Image (cartoon, rainbow over all chains, first blue to last red; front, side, top):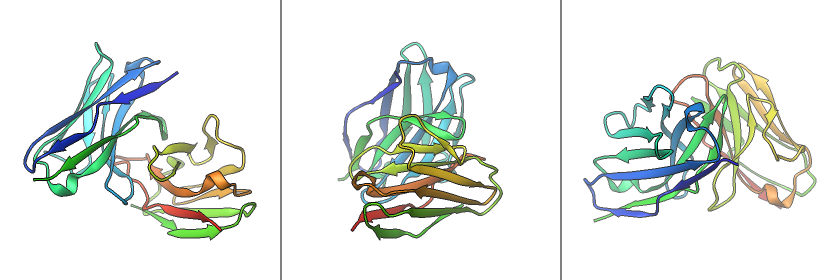
Length: 117
Length: 105
C-alpha cells in the first residue's frame, strides 16, 4: 500500500528557507514522479512542480522558478521540496503527491509552513 | 488555464450535481478531478477525464475531452460536501482549476 509521510510543521522568518520531506513506502519510487502542491489558508490548490524520479529532472511552475528545488533520494525513498526566500504569503500547507498518468494518485498528509516575523 | 463553474452550489441529498471544467486549450483527456473536505487532504476521484479511481463510489462520473469536461454526482450524499478541483496534466505546469464549493442543503 502506497504511503507518503511528510515532515512536521515549520515556523520560519521572512527570507529564510524551508525544506519539507516526503517519505515514501509501499511502492517502487523509481516508477513514479513526485509532485508538490501547496494551499494557502482558505485558498485553492496551487501547483509548484514535479520531479521525474527515474532521471532526476525537475520542472517548476514559472511562479516558483529560481526559488524552489525538488529532489529525491532513492536510497531513503524520500522526496524533498526546498523553498527559499520565504515571504509571509508563502504560508501554506505543502503537499507531496505521486504523479501517475493523468492524476496525482497518492498524497502526503500535508506540512504547514508558517512564515512570520 | 482552467475555469470551473459554478464556483459554488448548494444541493439536497439525492440531487444530481454537475460541475464543469473548461480548459483554455486542447488538453485531450488529461484531466483529473479531486474532492477536498475542509482541513483534509485532497482525494483523487477521476483520472484521464473519465476513469474512476480505486474506492471511489460509482455515483461519481467524469466525461469530456479537449476543452470541456464535466464531473457528475448522480445522487448527492452527505459526505460529498467540500470543494471539487479539476487539474490538467497535459503540459506543465499542471495547473488546477479554482474549485467548486458544494454545500449540502
